Figure (cartoon, helix red, strand yellow):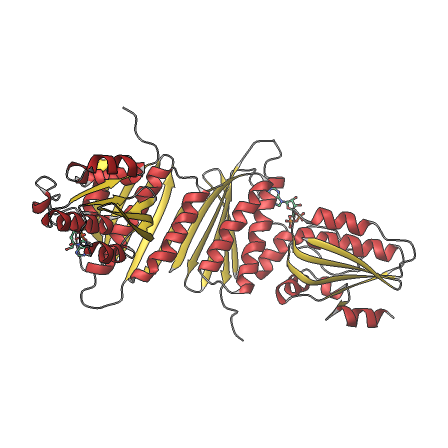
Length: 143
Length: 143
Length: 110
Length: 110
Ligand SMILES: Nc1ncnc2c1ncn2[C@@H]1O[C@H](COP(=O)(O)OP(=O)(O)O)[C@@H](O)[C@H]1O
Ligand SMILES: Nc1ncnc2c1ncn2[C@@H]1O[C@H](COP(=O)(O)OP(=O)(O)O)[C@@H](O)[C@H]1O
């Protein structure tokens, strides 16, 4: 048996991360997702949901965030959506990772991590929602 | 947090009912589905998946069964699909429930139970699959 | 599912706990196929039955037919609301006497 | 997440178990803000760290900056493969010495 898809909605609050991770753990263990893509899945959810909660609703509104995970053969497709302020996370250039400890800016790594570890990323604004689609490979492409 | 949708695929074997029910229990408890619709959900899954496994693959093929549950406001929508022999479960007349104990036929109640307890039922054959859609009310309609 | 059999005077009580579905009902079917010599009536105590599917109803109907054909009364007691609904919808409540509790079932049989 | 602090000679070891994410990293941040008098070097033992997000990396970078500005060396040991990958991708492995085990970290510091 596999769970092909799970589609979750949550209010834009950080205390929702715990039940969210419980549901994703259930998905991961039922589908026997290997450790590396399971880690990347968690990381992507962590970074994008936390960003939406922390930066998307500066007006103090309570928003609604969507997290959809779909298993499609060898690919895990994550779709994040939120009704916060329009923001394309892939527009800004990647952070500067060179330079000494003293020169490194603290922060600004979340989007970079996920983008680098994903097979593909995409952003669109649709029906008043930010929609981010991230695809992860289940198996490391060889070669 | 709510799980809006969970979409499951399983091989056509009865030993798959246990993990299937575990996943549905997770859906039910996360979404705090009340006892009566939770019971009807279980019953529908039980009857339709068991029927597909027991009657749908008389040729001995291993089939693939789909179970999708979607929470849509006040409605729980279940979609069952299988690639077994085409069969419309709602075509046959309902069983005769009158008559004495001696006259009652043993069996033939599964489809009747689900049809009676559902808000609506529908069948279609599509892309080589039987598709049954069952809608359950979360709250008992008053009056 | 867990099955307990108790004999009280000449009444055979079968108490079932848990889920009665396609995977567990064959076990109850076997148990109910045997009616010990000297039994005058049968009580199915379903107070702790949390779930029954059509596979379970089939076993109940078979047992009821068997009891009747042996000249015994069979009654049921203690249905939780959702199980009661399934009995209603399948027309069983019109065929088999349903009691609130084991005590009231036993009282009605004597 | 669970934090243990051990002092071995003049090396301050901070061992972190569990998940280091946005909800748990403030606690590590507080712990690492205090460097006891007399410490000569700092080891972050992450052998039992199963998960780190950018919030955790932020705390690690802050602690490294603090150590350097106090003239102390800070090294890390025991990264599981997935955590190691996150360190690689964020460029941290080029900035902070990473050791296989606590023993090799301590050996390198003395
Ligand atoms: N959903 C969002 N809405 C508005 N701004 C965002 C959103 N997500 C990220 N940002 C902006 O992009 C920056 C970089 O995000 P990120 O790479 O996750 O790093 P961090 O959150 O650690 O600063 C954030 O500091 C924030 O200014
Ligand atoms: N998926 C299916 N494919 C073929 N035949 C089916 C299927 N589902 C049900 N049937 C037929 O419909 C009958 C009635 O089904 P049901 O109401 O569930 O009662 P039961 O399975 O207890 O006989 C079955 O006996 C079987 O002949």
